Length: 546
Image 1 (cartoon, one colour):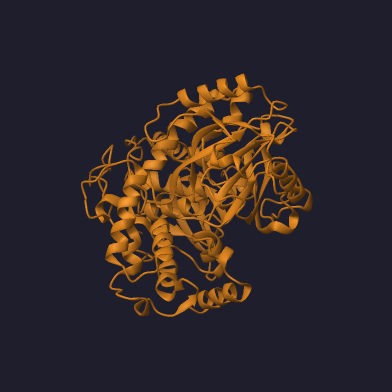
Image 2 (cartoon, one colour):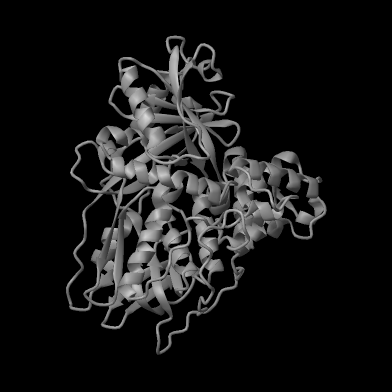
């Protein structure tokens, strides 16, 4: 087992090289049981919370192993609305602390990885039957001022008869409000956290199920089972349960306290959120937030250049957390109907080209309406033996703060306080200044990305512009790993699908844990939207034979 002995990163690394991280690549180090613990902390769960916690812990110098039973971000963490946002609608539920915490995190995240996250302006058409204008103005004023803003502009009223966002809407919507939040490629955000964790010495085990976790007075004996291997035992000093929808069942069925009893579990409220994707409904780059008669809201977001993402629903989920989780016909009808209340051209079920669903593990606060259930998180500590930390709830915007709080808690349980470090650190590939023609450039995040993209285009002028832009967004400063030594499309190997070459597939397999066509086409990218079924199958065949 690799011992992480790197010094803690600098507290703020936005414009310096102080947070340059060690790189271990994708070499797989065997887990060999010994008389001592194989690791300090074993993290169960490869979603955004688990990978964020593994990154923070490893960066503080602890030896970390993370195991995930499927692919990274295979479930809830790739099924979000793709937003970095404070949660404007949570103000009506008086969740001011949660909104403030999320608003504080927006700009921290936007600075950390401008290749996969960027500012997004939202237009709210005013429907007087929903909420009076004064209430919306008051809410937006609060939203603008609950946390400090440097990257994102504030809100304002707009005349939709003059604003570009008014053109696709029904003519009765004459007035609207514009405010700021951010967009994120959620599945890639998970992978970047895992890459960072690995770079700091963590071992990332995907497609590896934790079957037994037995606690004794000195630590945890954890049995892990890879899909293509025999069981192995990992000895850990502490255990973090970040299994998301499986967090309660993990405590009830897998973890053993050592006294012959079972761990008490906290009740989670499982809520299914579904989204649909249709061909682009508008050409501008603003998103929409629509109010519905049932007091819910839905978003219509520009997506993957030529599409529009519409969501989300909130439906109680009573099935197994393992799924399969799919959108229901009534959800498709609901999203189409609510979008059609605002768009001049109706959205119909025949317009849907793709859909996705995920189960959100929310803290059960006994709210009657699923959309009113809190999105905040709770970290529950158990120190009756070897340390155990369980993560309940959470949302993607607050994952970094959750991970920081979790690492603080683990340190307290181990009696080893180590300073937090992620507030000013880049995520993997986010160090764009080091890859631009002007390393000292330190502008706003999207200015940095624009400069970086221009440099990549100059260095690799043989790449088609659309492919350059896609890869720059996907890999950021790590693009040189994909293109190292290449001087033309022929040097990238066979074109397995349009715009997707063997070199990139090899990189995704060797460095980003991708194993199947689905991993590549729907999580590491969204290329599946643009490919035919035959082309998608060809990518799957290549991955299975590699």
